[in-house]
Image 1 (spheres, rainbow, N blue to C red):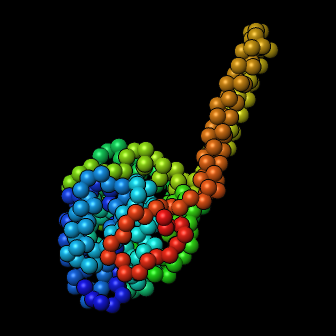
Image 2: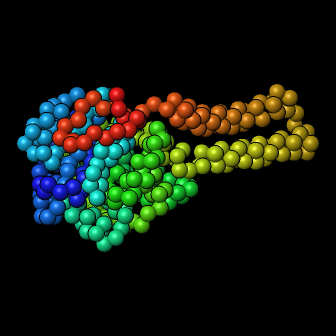
Image 3: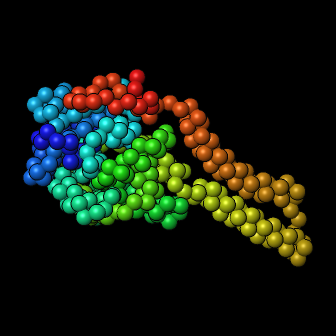
Amino acid sequence: MSNQSPFVSVVIPVFNEGENVPLLYDGLKRALADRGHGWELIFVNDGSTDDSLKVLADLAHKDISVKYIVLTRNFGQQAALTAGMDYAKGNYIITMDCDLQDPPELVPAMIEKAVEGYDVVFARRNFRDEGFFKRTTASLYYKLLEKFSDTEVYGNIGDFRLITRKVLVQLKGMREKSRYLRGMVTWLGFKHAILDYDRPKRIHGTTGFSLLKMVRLGMAGILSFSLLPIRFGLVVGLMSIFSGIAFLAYITYDTFINDEVYQLYKWLSVVTFVFIGFMFILIWILAEYVGQIYNESKNRPIYVIEQKENFEHEFEDTYTQL
C-alpha cells in the first residue's frame, strides 16, 4: 500500500460474515491492486456473534490497509455504514455489503466513472439471484418509492455505491437517526452515473437482513422521502366516503322506491364501520411520523464504538464517541 493518503476507501458493514470476509478481502485487493494509488478497507463489525472479529483482527495484523471498527452492539446496516464513512479518508468512498453479492470486480469500473467526473456512482441490479418472495417485494417497494417519493429514488439500487469526498462532507452533516442512505445520497443532488450488474447468489452464511429489518428500512425510506402515507390516507378516505355515499344511496333508493325498511342501527353500522377503518389508518400514519420525531428528539448517537484498529488519527465527533 502506498504511504500517501488513500485514493479509495471501501466501507463494509459486517454482521456474522466470518466466512465471507477473507473472500471479499481477496477480491477487493485484486480489484484495487493495479490502481497505482493507496487504499483502505474499513470493516465495521456490527455486533457479530460469530468469529468475524477474530478474522478481521488477523487481517488487520497482516495488512495495515485493513482497518476495522467494532460497535458495542448491533446498530443496523445504515448506522454501521455511517460509522465507516465517518472515518474514511479516501478521495473516493465505496460502500458495499460483505456477502459477496456486491461484486468487487465492479469497483474498477465505478472508480473510472468517478475519474470521468461523476460525484456519485450507483450500482444497479439487473438480476437478483434470490427467492421469489424477496424479488417480488423488492420490486413492488422500489416501484412505489420511485412513483411517490418527493426525491428521485432509483429502483433496484442498494448501498453498493461510490461517492466523492465532497459528497461525503455533505453527507456527514446529515445526522438524522432514522437513516436511509440510498435516499440521502440522492437527495444531495450531485451528478451521478449508474452501472448495471447481475447480483450473484450468496456463497456462505445466511443474510442478517431479516424480514423485520427490511420492513424497517423500507419504512424509513418511505417516511423520510415520501408523503405517500399521508396521500394513501387521503385516497382511502375518499374511497371510504364514495363507497359509503354509494351504499347510502342504494339503501335510500331501496327504502323510498321498493318500500324496504332498514332499521336505524343498520344505517349507522355501515357509516361507523367505514370511518373506524379510516381512523385506524390515519392513527397508524400519525404514529409513524410521531415516532420518527421522538427518535430524533432524543438526540442519541447513531452508533457507539467499542474498539478501532489501524486508524492513525482519532475522529472527533460527539455523536460517535463513548
